[in-house]
Image 1 (cartoon, rainbow, N blue to C red):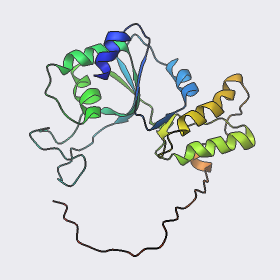
Image 2: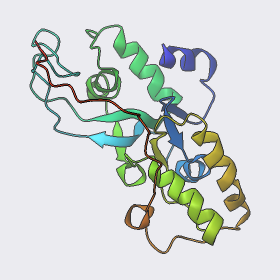
Image 3: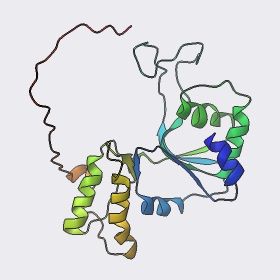
Length: 212
């Protein structure tokens, strides 16, 4: 539905970005990144996943049956956290979706199963991704202390829904050339002391939990 909406209302735009609502995106860095892409080609840029096996254990969140997906390995696809593409490719993917059997894991279906039917260039941007929301807080701390820029573009917000706006507001000063390049990646220098939760008094419970 998102692609269909894009095709109806945004078909004159240069790029299309899809992102989850619990993700932080360094918007200024993303704008710089877009300059590297040729918008005339069929491409998707994001965290590329290759060789992932279909999960056959019923207790797994991503369990799929042979009827849903008969092959053992998924085609290369990009994480739905964040990816960038073009309106041209969005239209092609939507058209393909009507003739293809639906598969409920949307990242695999949209950016893997459908795109493998046409020639699509996948740009792997995993170097700009992080799994750790603490890195964004470390970047903000280093900006305050040292005026260091941040080298992370995409990552989870860790449940802090306001962090997207706080982060981008803080780093807006870097667009004016007021920030210094980091001497080392934040992943190598981040130390973040989060406050532990006070859960109060209680006792442990050990019991059998039936998974299947």
